[in-house]
Structures are given as structure tokens and as C-alpha cells.
Amino acid sequence: MKRFWIIITISAITALASCSKDDPKESTNISTGVRFIVEDSEGNDLLNPHNPGHINTSAIRTYYLDGQGNTQAVYLPNTEGPYGCAVGGPPLTNSINYGTILENSYVLGVTLYGTLHGSARDGDTSTSYIKWPEEVTDILECTYRAGQNYLILSEVLVNGEVFWKESNENHNERPFFKIVIDPDGHRTISVIYPYAGL
Image (cartoon, rainbow, N blue to C red):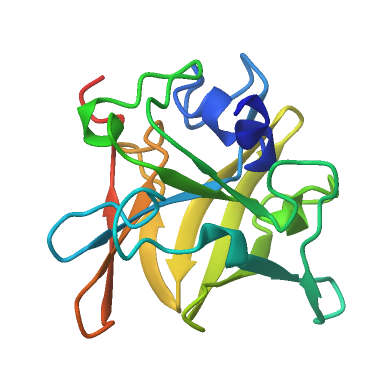
């Protein structure tokens, strides 16, 4: 699953990068991926293909809004996540210890495709869409801080609501988003911080 982390725009390699909020110049820092865990109301992992009622993750599609205001489908051939997203299963080892909160979880990483063109500037916002198999679409609006050697998330809106905003207290804690789906199909989205306390 090495390429899983490449698909989500190298976000995992810099989530705990040793740079300050005001002057992140000591290392290259690219953190533009968004990650989800999905559970039912009883806490069962719906991204785990071995669990009853799991989501067919191969049917998830992502889209982005281009510079002309047109919606474009994401397609990245010859990768493990050709439609702009990929699922990584436990244990999520990579170069970062995700903590016990994710030690048994499957994680959906989503590429914010509009940032891959290398043209994102400080304060720019990208709009991405995740279309789930149950015909539900989530809209991600992400704002970035950018400089000579860094491009990182500074704010994330999900379906028009601010879910995470960088601050002095949390700037090294890249958020994960947790979706809980109840038996009636109603969805609740919250933010978790698997890095907290590490």
C-alpha cells in the first residue's frame, strides 16, 4: 500500500513536520490530503471489506472544480486510487504513528486533485467532491497556506460548514474526519485528531 500515501498527496509524510506555524521553512512540507474513517452507529468499520454492510469503496468517485468553474472527474491511471481516493487498511504504519485511535481502522484518503498542478498560492481555495455509492455527495472546500517550500491545509469546510481551522494550538495536527451512518442512513460528520498526545 505504499502508493496509497502518494495518492493522498504525500499528506502523511508531513503531518507532524518539524516546522513552526509562522515560518515553516526548515523542511519541505506538503500536506493537502483529507482522510476519513466511516462507521455505523455501533462503531463497526464500514470501510473494512470484511464487515457486514461495508461500503463498496471501489465505487467511490471524486471530482474537483477547475479554474474555469467546471466540475472534472479525477482519474489517475496506473495508481491504486485511479479515481482520486484509496483505502488503507490496518496497521497504518508508514512513517507516522497514528496512535491507538486508528490502530484497527481502515482509512479513506482523498486527493485534493486541484492542488496537484503546482499552482496553488497562499490563501487559495480548492473545491472537491466525494460521491459515495449511496448517491450521497460531500463537498470539501479547502484553503491553503503556501510558500516557497510548503503547501498545507489551513481550513477545511465540509458541506459548507467549517470543520477544521488551523490555529496555534493545532497546526501540527492534521485532522481526520469521522462519518457515522445510522440504520436510517443519516450521516454525522465530526473531526478527530489521531496525533493528539504523540
